[in-house]
Length: 105
Ligand SMILES: [Zn+2]
Image: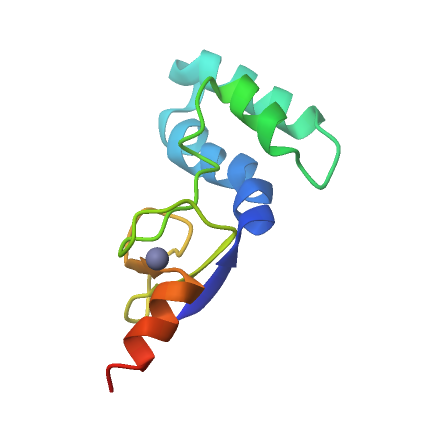
């Protein structure tokens, strides 16, 4: 289990972008390299709106609960062992849904 906060997710975008596009596709992905260069030029901590503008959508900074499907600032990601929590894997639960779940025990 890992707690993911919105700012951590936003700050991880350049690293995730590199892993997804640049490292795997190398020189074939020139436009992806250009996006990465722009992301690296941003001041830290990264600003959500600036990142979304560079990428062209909010899919890389959007943090949503898998239970209530609301956007949230923090989620608990539940998944066994070797996984990358910032990738879209595992079950993501917000604080409200976690409390409701705990009350069921
Ligand atoms: Zn929820």
